[in-house]
Length: 524
View 1 (cartoon, helix red, strand yellow):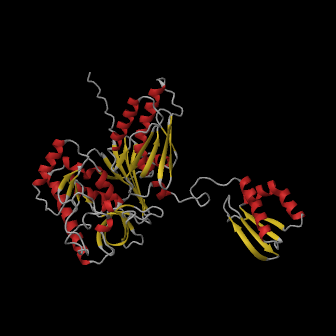
View 2 (tube, rainbow, N blue to C red; view 1 turned 30 degrees about the vertical axis):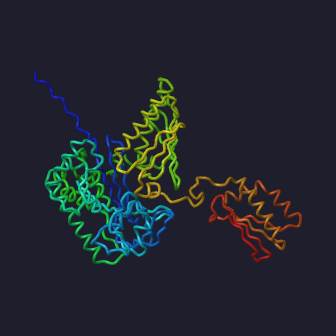
């Protein structure tokens, strides 16, 4: 008898890119690894994203104390240019921009120039936005401009060909440098060879190089012909950026749910990596794309403060305007191993999840992580090494300080966008982002104090109107009815409580009247 052949189970793609653009006002790109959300990018059509844009700008105020200059980009908000982001000796790009007055002819020898030595007010500079403005802060900018291709990054200020620091193998670095010699790169066209170039053909690299040459030629032409401030180069749309930055050789599938975005994605992939064009497919399922691949629930989890860990532990992420605090806890971890080993395992899980959460939430700036304290020095070193290894794969620049004696790790992560919470949510008008609303008892006491303050300063007051949210008004009348009656019985004013749906919970308005004439209004 012939043996029955076993049917092979269909291979489940391990790395998938999903592009959700079925609604004109929003585009979302998700990267799944083994079904788990690994990267997420969201862009709204109403939000004018300027990160990556290159401007011919004008230097405004120079602040020696901050060692920075405020630069007019022509966008309505000045960019913040630190001295460390200025190409010495005068911002660079000789022959492209007007020569600044009293400029230095040579780069400094043995010391760094101050910002006031390098820049002058009203000077033309070529700058690129490296991070979006947040709150009252303007966008961060640099004169070290860069335009990414698929395999190369154009960096004119570099003036040479370098290799990405993410390629650590000396043999691979040497081989890439030797390959680039054959392309005869012009000296003025500084380049960085990206990691993807190690598996690219000469034709693919040459195509990328020619594209970047055209970009730089066009940039120079516009910079010479147009007055500052003006936009010279606009960064690509989200679909193009995502494909350029995250489409790797191990990506099994790119699924797009809208015909226009599918055509754009297919066309772009055909140009940068023809062999991968068949990986781009149009989704035609009945369920929404992100629902079908079970991504929607994972995105909703990103809005929560508490993040669960596999072994039962958890961490809490709190964001403020200046920094992010992360607290790691063992929770319901019931491992049978010793306490020290259990704590180490929880901390290692938290380190991996922390890297994922910072990447998905697009969190940048100063991050303080309070890991569970470990008594064994070897375990602290292991955690430190694990953190460095995990974050070395992050596309954003990350600096990690040694673990403190209290188990706290200080780290900084490059901020490029506004962060997912700032994109999806508005600041709460009731609590102003604090998460706290005044208790009704405290509100009632504040009302009574305000009434007495009004009566002491406006003795002619004979009517007082208290305006509160409906629920607060009911609670106030129930709790303070006797005190109100006592004030009225002593010959005091007539006191009325008026519920108003327009007043937010925890807020109050007190109007003091003489008959019908308004004397004073107190609000807080």
